[in-house]
Image (tube, rainbow, N blue to C red; front, top):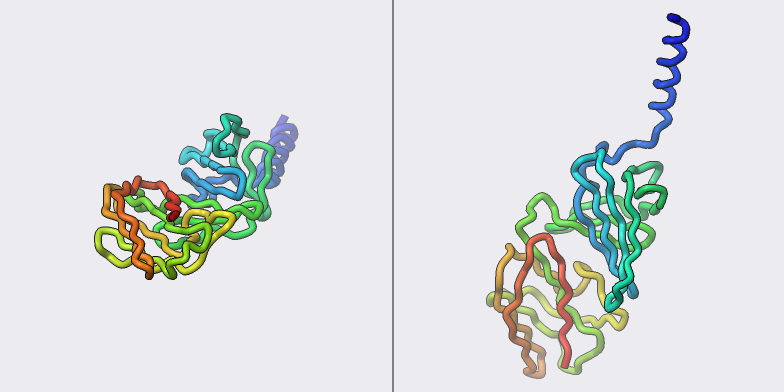
Amino acid sequence: MKKQILILSLSILIYGCGKEPAIKENELYKGHWTGADNTHEYNLIIPANSSADGEWNKSKPGSSATTVRKGPVRVNDKKLFVATKGFSIDKEIHLDGNWWKMELDGIEFIRPSQNETHGEYTFWIETDLGGGPITVFVDGKNEGAINNFFPGGVHCGNGDVNVSRPAGTYKFRAEAQNGKTWIEDIEFIATKCENYQLTN
């Protein structure tokens, strides 16, 4: 009987050592991550409760079709898994301003840092609007200039001018060198990063 108990205990120990690491070993992964490429938007939800299922989904703007995968989340050998779907961790989690960022399968995912009271806007242009650099102001503060254009779009947080503010409504103004201006009230939403495209 003692021999059987010993064998059973050793089996459990060996199984436990061989299991893939649980997500709880790195608290930074937990939260709601968002990402995008030229065709799709992505959500990765890793719950605070390590025993609860996480979710990965992708959708195409303008389409009601959504691909969803739910299941346990774990990290093992530079890969992150949601159920059986694996993602290569191309860039480890790192802090950039008020946002945590990581790259999975070549797509950048972001989520707010511990301060979840802020929202973010990325101001950008798709083509040359012909007015030279465009200076961006939020509530009168000069936030920098848009010098480049992005024909394929830009992922939120990676434009020329990226602004973080506590949640609320602010006065936005942009001025091109040729005198053209854009003026609008914009709302920063906590934990959300939004793109603002300037057009003629």
